[in-house]
View (cartoon, rainbow, N blue to C red):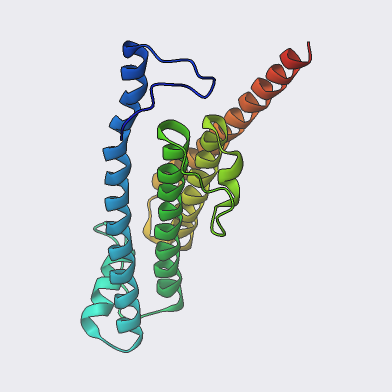
Length: 205
């Protein structure tokens, strides 16, 4: 991780700016940590999938794990005694939730590294993500907001499917939080649009 002392224009960086610029590599352990978190999510996904398949094949222990996972932690919660369509749907939504969080991690890891640490030089690579070709801090922020809304939607759908097991205050709180996420994403997108238009106008003038 040796840093070039010359910029692309040929101007040599003085020691203090070069040192400050090099400090961006301190973010590298953070992204490596997120990769480890991604590994944990992969393991969790396969554990849940294994339990779902085992419950479908009649394994009592897998069924118990599944029912405990999809039943809200409430004293009045009614624990199902068999694998129903609703239970399967809740488990599958949980798996989708893990996938969407995993996608969010990938966006943070790849997009954040590309934006704030160092170029990955993926131009021309057949597997380069389409969104990475025009990513910047603003685009990354908007995409992360949309991903969080998607994750919140899955959680809200799981709650509504199992609404009978939840208190009315919980349903209202989750709906309010989801609306707050939507409004935040709209505000971020609107701010980004204003910033882009202002930047374009200043370039034309």
